[in-house]
Amino acid sequence: MARRPGRGRAAEGALIIGIAISHEVVAVQLTRQHMVDVLRKAGLPEMADAARRDLPDPVDSEQAAAWAVPYGVNMDDLISRMGGSP
Image (cartoon, rainbow, N blue to C red; front, top):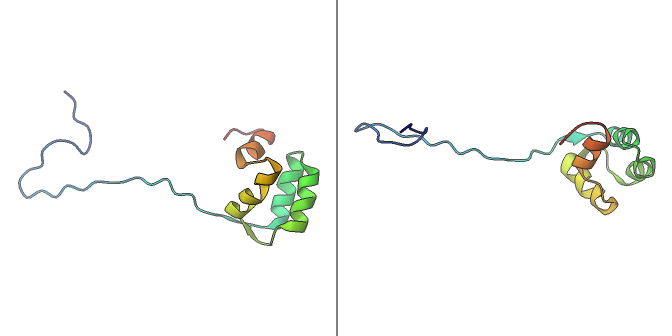
């Protein structure tokens, strides 16, 4: 039977350390112009115009994502429209 990491018995007096992996999302600061350019490149010129009017400069990625929700667009949609995959 193969042992899995973190399983099994430790020698007397040994210190066992567990590692927890977290999936945190870190907001990234973007310029408003960058968002406008990305939206135009993704084929969303009306949304780009709205971003120029509505978004602060700079804008963090979480704030930009929340702003895009009423338009029915999320970051995966933008990546896909630009030829990438999420």
